[in-house]
Length: 253
Image 1: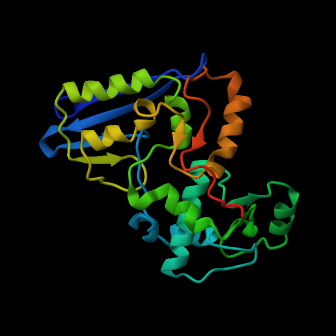
Image 2: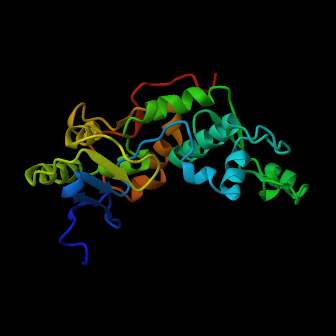
Image 3: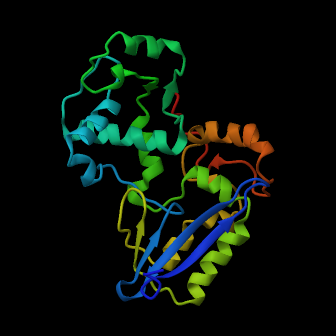
């Protein structure tokens, strides 16, 4: 490739099941001591990325998710933008977060059809009701921007932790002394080196348990999927099914 002389790279390949294959790639730019990664690691903080505040359509999406009722049109304030951002992150990572009560039936759709001209779009469709524990939920997950793994990615990596270890070992053997990591998603750059980057995968090398630092309620939906539908398409893991390291956080109290 054209960049072959400028970027070194190492590919992570994990085969979580007989009919599936997961790959990620790390690219090292030695002159700037920067590592580029795809999905393996990410970090997030309370403020939306500047790009989401630079365009009215993106701001509209933030406010859409900041609503507490189908009819509400939140004021465009920084707090409401943060509120919408928190909820987007929790949706994206857990599908049904512990602090949310999902209603994926016909009622929210029927309500949306009553207001087709809703200014924030989608007829104001609102299939989730958020509990007061939403902020607590987000803070436990983000931990002020500490690097993390997507829970769905951890389900995959837990099937072949040896591949993860070998990937990190190859980076170390090549002397990748990076001081900054740029993930493909969310906050960047992250001011971490190889040691901190590798620590993100401690579930595989420390307690050897399929635990994430989130609340246990957050991963309940993913755990049920892992024990149910996914059980027939992925290999067994000695680390057990996905769970929250902190245990329940009373998000549904």
